[in-house]
Image 1: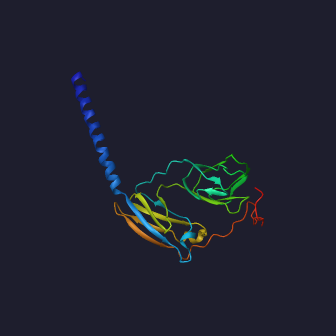
Image 2: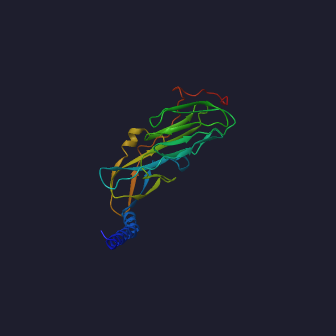
Image 3: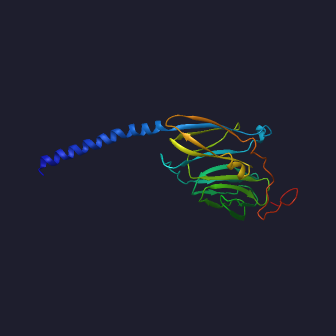
Length: 243
């Protein structure tokens, strides 16, 4: 191959690369245009007063082939113990994320969870210290303190970025949903899993077309009952905990 031929070949290659680069934004724009928004509302029974509405999370999992939804990258989160409360009360995290439980109270705490999302007991630890838990699989973990029965929190680990936390009216919106068929999952705090399973449904998403649905959970929601301690027994009936 002569010098002239190599030069021509190099120019052609650069031209092709330039065309590919110039088309990339257009391709990305077309992909964004294909996505849709799924909005809706989870309706509870009339006895669920606004001031006592439970936390609600809705998420989508893809069925079969289509536009594969990439799992979100794990991160590092915090559930702070302060004023005998967990702050925030609800955390939705990607699977594989680590959650720290710093003790910002001037007394001891004992954080635990006996639920299938992630079972653990962090033991008794003092003010100013912290513990960590890795949520390595999907699931819902109810978090409590073995000393203070009023303390509760929830960590939901998901393998999909397609989720939403409903507002105080039960309304939610999931953006950037690719076209395909999805299973819609609903979690309502304090509701038994069999009742939640009956709320799941198949949701088809058309390219670029937003949808709106209403989920009637009036027969599913039940008020949160008093939970048991780490040992499966009622908390001691004392006016004030020792810590």
